[in-house]
Image (cartoon, rainbow, N blue to C red):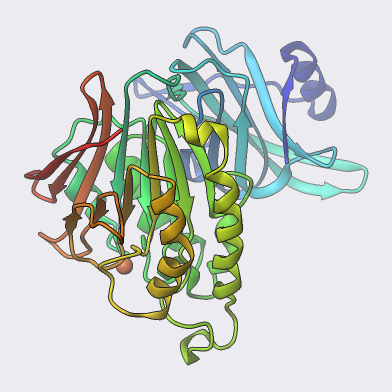
Length: 400
Ligand SMILES: [Fe+2]
C-alpha cells in the first residue's frame, strides 16, 4: 500500500472534473461548528503507527467512500492533501479508511481534517459520488527524535470491558506519546462492531483522539471468527504482529507470543500454527539483536503478551521461554513488559533466568487492573505502575 501526496491544485481540479463537486465548508448549526455529513462516519479518526516522521490516520465509515486528508503545520493552513493508493489504484469503495502520512518532522504538532466522499454507484465507466464528510480540525504529534524525552503508557488484559479505559485513564493527564496495548483487549474476535464498541471508540474517548495507540496481539486476539481480519483495522509495522521500532532512547521489540496452549489442543480445531510462528520470530529476533541500532540503543525494551516467566507451565510460556529467553539474556535487554497472567508483578532480575526486570500488568477486574508508564527524561528511564484508582504501585529506574 502506498500513500501519495497530491498537489493541492491538481487534486481540486481533478475532483471537480470527475464529480462536478466542490469541497463544502463545515456548516454552522446552532452556533456550533459541526462536521458535514456526520452520518457517514462510524468510528474515528484514530491514530496508528506513530513514528518520528510518519503517522497513520484511520477511520471507519458506514458506507463505501473515497477518502483523503488535508493537513499542515497550522490550523489555518491545511495546505497538503494526501490519499492512499495500492497498485496504482486510489483506495476507494471501502468502509475501512487508512492513510499514512510520511516525510514529517519529529516532535511536531500537525493539524488535519479527514474527508470521505460517499460512492453511491461504481460502474465501470461512471462513478457516482454522494455527500462528503469533512471533520473538524484535529491534531497529531510525531514522535520526538532520539535523545529527547519520551513517554509510553501500557495497558493490557482489558478483556471486552470498554469502561475500563476511562476508569484507568481518568486519573492521568494525557501526556503519553502513544498507548501500547499489550494484548487481550478482547476475549475473542467477533466482528467489526466489537472493535469499534469495545476498543477504538472508548479508548479514543478516554485518551483523546490525538494520542496514537498500538494494538499488540495477545492470545485472545487470535480467537474467534474475526481474528483473521484484525490486520485491516490496525497498523504495527510491515503488516506483521512482531516488529521493532525506536522511540527516543528506546529500541522497542514487540513479540507475538501466540496462543497459550499447544497447537493440537482441541480448542483450536486444527487451525493454528504457533510453534512454527514462534520459531520464525526466534530467527527474526536473532537478526534484530545483531543490529547496530539495537546495540547502540541506550534502552532495549521488549514487549510480549505472555511473559517468559511467572506464567505457569503451559505450552505457550514454555515455548516462548525456551526460544527467546536465552537470546534476550545475552542481548542484555533493559526490561520485559508483559500481561496475560492477570496478576500484577514487578519481578527484579533473577540471575541465570532473566538478567533484567520483568513487569507484568494486572487485569481485567476492578482493583486488579493496572497502568504502566515508561517515562524517559534527563533523570533516566523510569517504569511507574498504577492501579485503577490512580494510586502508584511501584516506581523502578530502568538500567541503561
Ligand atoms: Fe488476558
